[in-house]
Length: 461
Image (tube, rainbow, N blue to C red; front, side, top):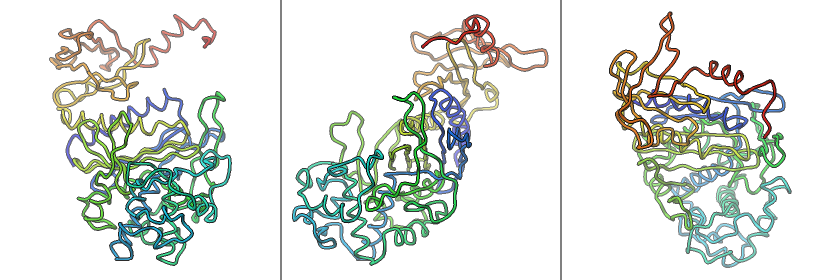
């Protein structure tokens, strides 16, 4: 493992502590794997705001559309066994489909290019307004023509992946859950993952939560709602660590995997660009992909009532990052992007040298927090409130034990000015002067703000 990886992870966790506090999110669990092995996992916040239950890395989450990657791996395993081909019409395996649906191929459905309806005529199953579709109801949705012509663009479809579950059942003559858990989940070596609810094994379950708005407070959303025929699209339950292990095995360069390198390359290949999107990203076979901070990534995301999740595997450094959050307005996307920016900054600058290593910590003014983050032979001034805490970051060159100079800064910052640290009689750093700004520990700033602005009354919104 490169020397910069561990300090990058340490700062990412420090940044996440701030993010959970400032965002008022219930909680999250995060796991990071290197070459398929978990090198960090941690939990923040609460699994249930009503009971006050603390989050742990062992709490199970609904991982929603991450399930599609498991289903896609199952289809590719059947392809490797010559049980199907990607260009086979789906009607070869499932009856009672509309003729135009029957003519769409397995590969088109896997890549969301079959033109099928996204969630059917009533998408209330995803907002708790109705039960998820039964097999009979799913076939009824598939008895009408595709919404658009197949093979013309990316058009996401949960209905399509429900249909792929039927393909697996009709080929294997086993229930989807039984086959996928044996052939994919257990073969990968996942011990905290199940394909559907209710869970077959006793395990702590993180409660989902409603958004903070419009009610102004969060309610707990049950995490045990069965998805019936839509299970192959979104029914899986897992931990961040297990999800990281699975996606690490999907890398074409992984040494151990449930699939052949050829299958993994086909899954992660960019089949379709996401149209009408301001951010360039792609879909493969049950796999999302894109680029950020100069790195290519592949993975998936998930959204189900009460839960938001996201995964990115970065082949360039063989790191897999998973963020699972337990609220419908969860920040998993934002936080995973932040992780990529943080990792990229450390990869560029390197692990901190001995000279700058102790120039660290979170320092405050009445305007907010500032992080001193040593990298390489300099100290970066990070903004923990930002999605990319090092965007246009000021950089400090350390010139003495407690002195430095700003040697890189944007035009509106304090380029060329001095930096110094003040210590207590016991030798502890108690202040940081960043040019003309005095930064202090959090408790000192809280006391000062109360004295100056508190007046014993909470501020009105």
